[in-house]
Length: 211
Image (cartoon, rainbow, N blue to C red):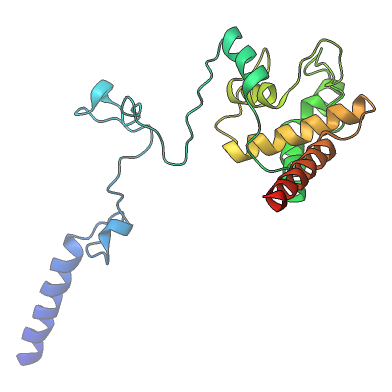
């Protein structure tokens, strides 16, 4: 009789456990927040939110973490101002030049070519046509001009502001100016910057010693 009762109790317990079991949602979960995200899923719909979507624009006048505001507008006037006034704040160093070359090959060479002659692989395959060389006459390519174009894009070229950081863009600008110098048969832009920096340092040291 006792065995029958024990067996009946076990069966009842087993049935009560399995009757509420959902194979898609375990009954007991250790650290449930690791299973179910508290944040809203991308592109999900929610009636309580504006437009019923989880995708919302940032709050007005806020700046994303790590993003540096850019003071030149996406206009002809803004581009002209950046071309003449905006200067590269990064130091010309082997590290920056090497990184700039690497980033250029990733983002730019497919159209502009490894040499900056406008003969990238997409041009050769006729996916894009009419991409000018960095050495073409009439092109006022400066540090600020390169940075501005990467920020906003130009003609068929889109913006690279979301793919690159501020430092990345300045490093790429260094390499582009070196390519331009090579195409024109001039000394590398980076070498002239280093030399001018050395001259300034020597002048400052001489001035300090005189005082």
